[in-house]
Image (cartoon, rainbow, N blue to C red; front, side, top):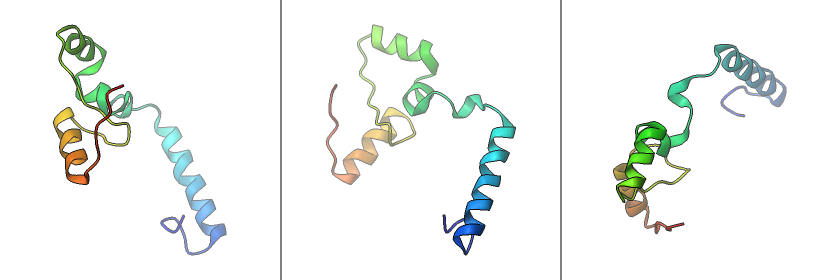
Length: 83
């Protein structure tokens, strides 16, 4: 909340304004679908990868391509779990 104001009251007011402006902008397709879906080329690309047996790494916390996700996880020392 510190990003939006010096006091709690001001921060709440500014945050509410920020959210309302975002709602007024409407849905943005480039921000929908999550990192894996978007980086795979949409549902079609994801389906094609699955059908070809290609494994696509993803992590809901990280937006980016499978290669980027792998690099971030490797650099952070985290293991990728296959689910």
